[in-house]
Image (cartoon, rainbow, N blue to C red; front, side, top):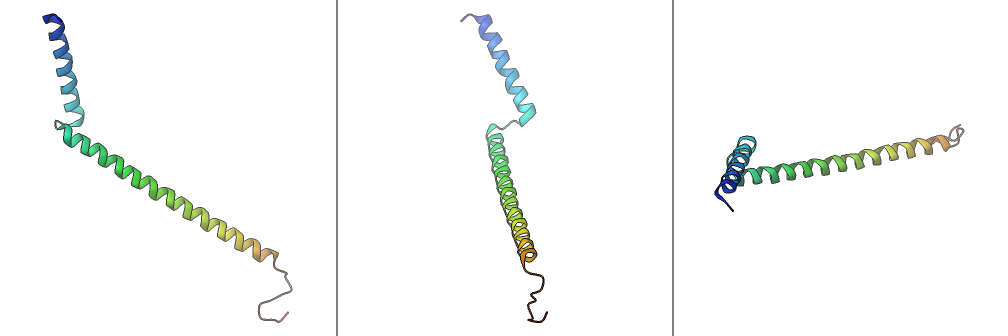
Length: 83
């Protein structure tokens, strides 16, 4: 590899490192930790939302089932035994 190609490559690498440092911070270890932490937090939030959705669907299904059972119950029958 000739000197010009090495110089061009080193300038490209330096520009890439400077751009990364400007966008993400200077410490790559901290950047990786932050990225992993962000991924973990997003995963926990997604799991919580999925669980809340399951609970909501179950609640709605229970309410609809109870409502249908009340509708199908004969109108003349009361729980106290009096008509």
